[in-house]
Amino acid sequence: DGGITQSPKYLFRKEGQNVTLSCEQNLNHDAMYWYRQDPGQGLRLIYYSQIVNDFQKGDIAEGYSVSREKKESFPLTVTSAQKNPTAFYLCASIGASGDNEQFFGPGTRLTVL
Amino acid sequence: AQSVTQLGSHVSVSEGALVLLRCNYSSSVPPYLFWYVQYPNQGLQLLLKYTTGATLVKGINGFEAEFKKSETSFHLTKPSAHMSDAAEYFCAVSDRDYQLIWGAGTKLIIKP
Image (tube, helix red, strand yellow):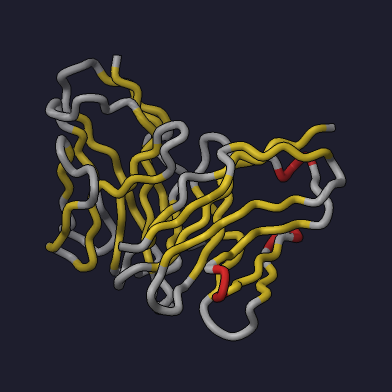
């Protein structure tokens, strides 16, 4: 089945450590996104990539980094510079339908202790 | 800049009652509009979308929404609420290429 996988589902890290969240898709989608979700704040865009080897900052990119070396993969690194990293992180992609419908992964809940 | 407003962070209805979740958007051009549902600790799932054509859009799980250009609205409805409808619902509008602008979400609570 085609879809987006995110791993792990739950992640715990100590303060000051960098951590990388995985996002893989087998939908052959070009564009991929990372969102952060906090209670009552909806979805906030961290980074997005429209094509391999290219990505742009979203609204809250500070303290995060990404890479897009393969079409299928768009990992997100939460660095120690991110002041409040505990949140639910969602990865999404857009297909070729032309209407910008986004397909989502199951999410990773990151807790920094 | 485009924006999406969802009226009410929480909406509570009795099981079997009408569900109405409100969404208003600002857009200078005909938009693409979406409703997504999110269950706790899960990703978002598309309920329905409006792109072109018929303004009344039917989605999954018995939900539907009507695009009203004059009111810049895309409210989500379901005639009879079920306990399994308890979730958070997000409205979104397509902005420039490859971007969605998101509402803050509405948590739907179903009372037995």
